[in-house]
Image (cartoon, rainbow, N blue to C red; front, side, top):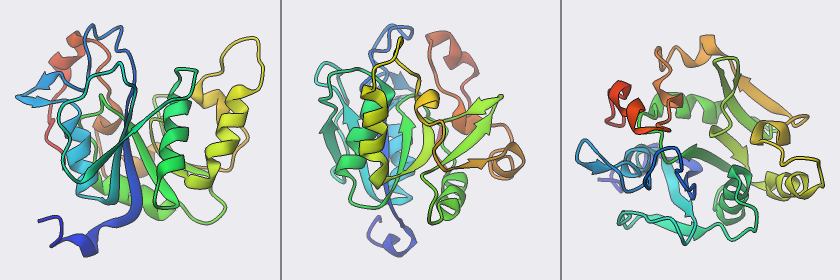
Length: 210
């Protein structure tokens, strides 16, 4: 099936970050059974329908379910545990110049929105990131592969406190996807809903990838 629609796939690497400890969730998110399927397989299914390359970035101490044969796995071996190190690992291993990155607990990715973001990643743009709920959504974003070392350098620069991912991205040429744009594809903003606690599963609807 994937071979039959190969001409529709984007020349982009799709990555799910699955190296977090899930402290608030209370158990590993990737293997959590959501409607009878491990949570990790929801974003993977969407990315397999979109991207010519699909990866999972994780840590040795975080369990994963069996991965589809088309999906590669890469270990985030950088010392600091931070979303940026997972992104850097993905960028270093990517086969394509553009890399879509999302979190493992985002089961409602919208394929049409991701495709639209891909076409917004023009030359000179380091990242394409939606803006929702008053802030950027850097764990639902497209990054240029050659951003890897700049991002790592920023993360390793001594600061009083470890900077957030949003802080690391400040000053970079980012193409922001405004609300009026992404709502054309995802009116309720389900793409950006992640499941940080079991209680949030109650409101998690429409889980099947599109």
